[in-house]
Amino acid sequence: MFIQTEDTPNPATLKFIPGRDVMGPGAVADFPSADTAGRSPLARALFQTPEVSRVFFGSDFISITKRDGDWKHLKPGLLGTIMEHFTQGLPLMDGAALEEDDVGGEDSELVQQIKDVIDTKVRPAVAQDGGDIIFKHFDADSGIVSLHLQGSCAGCPSSSRTLKNGIENMLRHYFPEVTAVEAV
Image 1: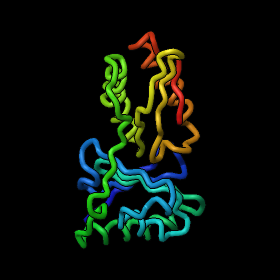
Image 2: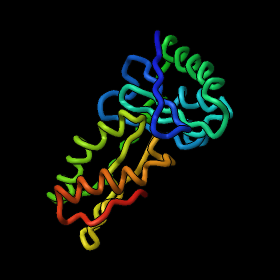
Image 3: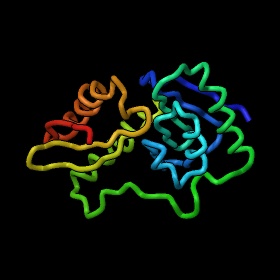
Image 4: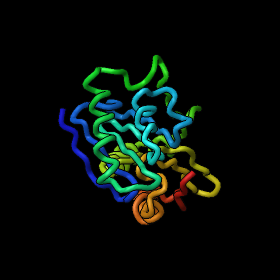
């Protein structure tokens, strides 16, 4: 098994690409701390490295964020952990532990259109950088779209620029009702 790595815009996050599905198309799992990794044997194993502060599973990649340390020292052990997990055929998640990140309820036509633009134009681009952005809410009174940043996007120095210059401008172009985008 050969695992590629890619830098992300967040210098504290490295993207690991095992050359196979991780979560599968459209699915993600975010573990912002070791305390949240209970449902995933691989996330638990990665958090055994004390410098690991966040683990994110995308469709075909794993993003790992470090709290400190140098990637040249951390990368070999993390590659070994990922390789061992997949070559042993261990499950990514325990049992039926997958959670849907759904805002629930019935969406207005505008909200559904905003979600569609985010899913088709924003999420694939953000996944290239080892992260994900999930629609959370649209406040029709203020025109504010609330998004949840995951993976390498969470805590990335350039995430506010991406939100304002990229996503907000795009959504305002397509939907005059949108006045701003904020991270929650």
